[in-house]
Image 1: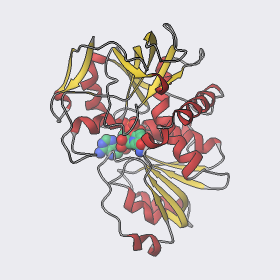
Image 2 (image 1 turned 180 degrees about the vertical axis):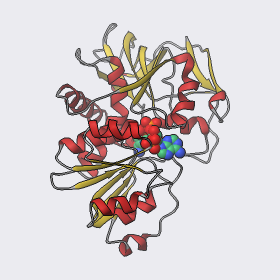
Image 3 (image 1 turned 135 degrees about the vertical axis):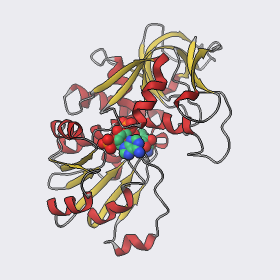
Amino acid sequence: MKAVRIHAHGGPDQMRFEDVELAPPAPDEVRVRHTAIALNFSDVNVRRGGFYQPEPMPMPIILGNEAAGVVVEAGAQAGAWKPGDRVAYVGMRGPFYRNSGAYAQERNVPADRLVPVPDDIADTVACGLLLKGATAASIIERIFPPRAGQTILIHAATSGVGAILTGWAAHLGATVIGTVGSAAKAKAAQANGAAHTILYREVDFVSEVRRLVPAGVDAVYDGVGKDTFVRSFDCVAPFGMLVNYGNASGHVPPIDMIDLAIKGSLSICRPAVSYYLNDPVRLRGTAERLFDLVRRGVLRIDVAATYPLAEAALAHTRAEAGEHAGAVVFLP
Ligand SMILES: NC(=O)c1ccc[n+]([C@@H]2O[C@H](COP(=O)([O-])OP(=O)(O)OC[C@H]3O[C@@H](n4cnc5c(N)ncnc54)[C@H](OP(=O)(O)O)[C@@H]3O)[C@@H](O)[C@H]2O)c1
C-alpha cells in the first residue's frame, strides 16, 4: 500500500508518498481500508518535530491520527467487527504524536479504538469531525460549558476546532466573539453563529473586545497560542477562564501564576484530547453525541478542501499559511 511518510523532521518537502509494507492485523486489531483521512494541525507539528517531546522520534513516521474507512479483515479477538463495516477512529492509545499512521491507504487499528459511522454521516464528515469535535467537547462539556448570557472569545474562529467551538457555543446561547484572519473568514464565522468578528491581524483585538464587552468576556478558547494567549488575559472578566488548546502560532511562553491574581482571579487550562479519548467508552459516547449534533444541524462540518493523499504536502503548505477555513480531508 501507499502511505505518506517523513524520514526526517522539516518542511512539507520531507513528506514522501511511497510504498509501505503492512503486516496482517494482530488478533485484537482490525484492518481498515481508508476512504477519508483528516488533516489536523498536530500533523504539521509532528512533521516539524521538536515540539512535544525532547527525545528524537523514531523514523520513518507515517503522519496522521484520524481516518474513516471500511473494515477489510478483523482479527480473531477483535469483537463483532466484520468486513464491510463503516468505521472511523481518532488516535490510538496515548499521546497523538506517538502511534500516528493515518496518512495511508490501509491501517491496522486496535478494535476498541474504532467507532461505527452511522449511515447518514459521510466518511469525509466523520473524519473531519471526530478529533476536532472531541477537542471542542472536552472544552464545552467539561472545562467551561458556555451558557446563555455569557460571552466567549474564540480565536481563529474558522479553524477546524474553532468552527466547531463557535457553532456549539452559539447554539448553547452564548454570545461568541470570533477572531479571524480575513474578511472571508469573518463572513464564515458569522454564518456559523459568531455575533461579532475581529480581524485580529488588522486591529488590536484586546481593545476591540473591551469596546464590545467593557466588563470582559467570561471565557477565551484559544488554539492560536503564542500570538494571542497572554494578551487575552486583558479580555477576561474577573474569575474568567482561559483555555489554551493549541499553538498554531507557536508555544505560549511560561506564565507567572501571580499574573492570574493581578488580572482578576483568572483560571487557565491546557487540555489534550488524547487524554480525553483514551477511555474507549468515553470515545464512543463522544462520537455518538458529535454525530447527533451534526444530524440535528447544531454542528456544521464544512469540508474546506479535499486533496488526493499523494498531495498531502501541498495541503500542509496551505494549512501552515492559514489558507483553509474548516476541515481538510485526504482521499486515498
Ligand atoms: N489540545 C488538543 O488536544 C488539540 C486538539 C486539536 C487541535 N489542537 C491544536 O489546535 C490548533 C488548531 O487546530 P486546527 O486543526 O483547528 O487548525 P487549522 O484548521 O489548521 O486552523 C489553524 C488556524 O490558526 C490560525 N493561525 C494563527 N496563527 C497561525 C500561524 N502562525 N500559522 C498557521 N495558522 C495560524 C489561522 O486562522 P486565521 O487565518 O483565522 O488566523 C489558521 O487557519 C493547533 O495548534 C492544533 O495543534 C489541539
